[in-house]
Length: 69
Image (cartoon, rainbow, N blue to C red; front, side, top):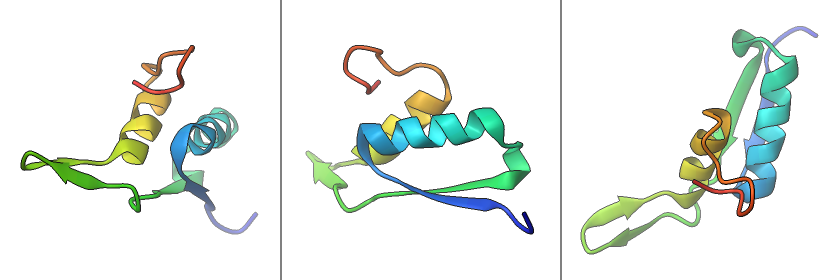
């Protein structure tokens, strides 16, 4: 391979893909672009559910029953 792997991720499935790739690739070999199409602002607070899900999953903090943090 001649460069990093680019993974497009969104939702629980994308988070699982990102986690799996992170298990077999070195950090410098993986770039993850996460969906922000579902982002919203609630009561003045910006919420990025897909970004949160990917981050929780990569950190090992996702709920195994629901797939999110």
